[in-house]
Amino acid sequence: MQTQNKCEKTYHVKKGDEVQVISGSWKKESGKIIAIVKKTDRVVLEMKDVSDAKKEALIGKRTVKKSAANPKGGRTDRAVSVHVSNVKKKG
Image 1 (cartoon, rainbow, N blue to C red):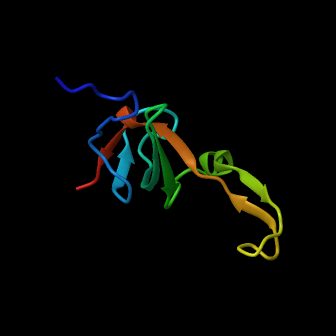
Image 2 (image 1 turned 135 degrees about the vertical axis):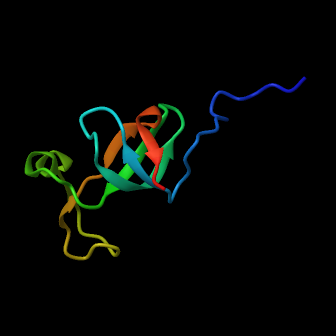
């Protein structure tokens, strides 16, 4: 009999999939999965075209220090985290 670790979970979506949010505050929005957080059962989405200006403001900004990868520093967009049960694959 095999034992399963706590974080060995499988989902109906994977990194890189195009998904649509079917429930919650981001309902009817679509995006691409850039990460899956198995510990909390959430997916991190990169939103494409946000339909509402209020929702676009909720995405927010993040301050980034100067580094080799980001020589100017400054502010960048923050991604959206949604529970995995609230998304479905497009198509």
